[in-house]
Image (cartoon, one colour):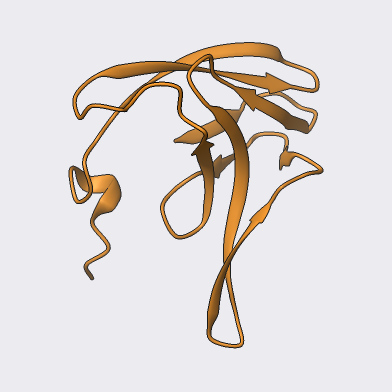
Length: 107
């Protein structure tokens, strides 16, 4: 997912929600050879006239405590709450591990 802020002021993703899971933004980092996923509890800044990418191995949305299983190919709605832009609902396509370009880490 790429969030694009076309405005002249920065904005902040302050929360993410879904009716089928708990959702939060996390950032993957490597410290002392160990991979850590740190919750972005203060939100995610989206600079003015810029974009922020969410992708495996970096900044990403983590789904926890699913109320129903996810099935490859289906779409699920998630609501992004921004400090200035307000609520925006987006549909995410569920993909299996290794499906699509988003999971291709080859160089």
